[in-house]
Image (cartoon, rainbow, N blue to C red; front, side, top):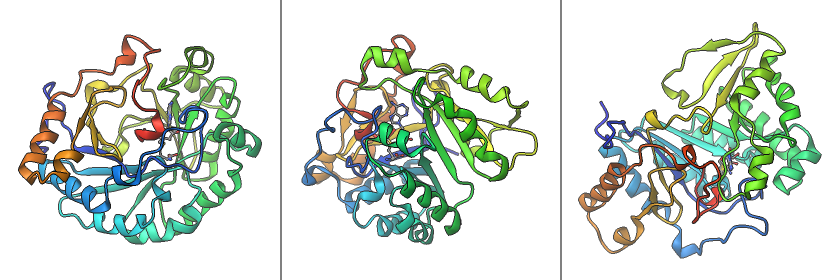
Length: 330
Ligand code: SAM
């Protein structure tokens, strides 16, 4: 039974931890042109500090932790950190979201360290388009990283695709068809307005219903019941396909009523909603000698204040004022 609930009686058992704001890509929807302002080294929590906060959260009722970034794999010593995290008593699930660039080198070690689930972000199968979206010429390396993850034993391989009209919506079917003969989960995510220009949002947003309609032009889809780990994705399968297509619709069918998440940023701020600018500083008390009881009180208070729903319900163009996605972790 979860020990943590917010004031709307939602159980909070999932912590997403951004271990760095640095990234080796510059995706057009995630990182502002010219790059995001990078945190100073001393402002980023040390692995020891993350371990302490995560253990406190786990003792309070968090059972699932996902590492994100920036790009989590660019932080030195990440596999050793994963090994220590995986050994925390009470932590039931440890996963990672990555752009895949460093998976070729790290997949095996990550698996050995205890990570069993990786989500890999890949919005296109075309190297030129990859360059356009990410501003880096790294498609081949990501593709090799996906194969390395498969060889290392990660199963299923989950690929996250942010769909943008006029940019990669013409590849929805090609990407989804990867599920025909591979046991991949291809998960299409609605583009979310974070720090993006209104006109850009208007031009490129495409709804989950439209994505689903495209998939249905190929064949009927069987909806698959959600399992525990599925989170907000709705899952479908084409007849005889080995893999699964997921649709994640934070905007058009938002999942705020069942949101079970809280976030910890690389610089030690608790965010109780992806889209809210409200943050609670837990790093300062941590560094000023707060006890575990003090820190768990701060965590509990942040969870207590979790908003009923995200602000994009009422204003799709509202921006997160203080951070681009790369500094939150998605
Ligand atoms: N670097 C890692 C990666 O690429 O997966 C982890 C961090 S990244 C911020 C996490 C996820 O957020 C990625 O799947 C990315 O595509 C997604 N993301 C970033 N900005 C987004 C936006 N504006 N709308 C929807 N998804 C977004």
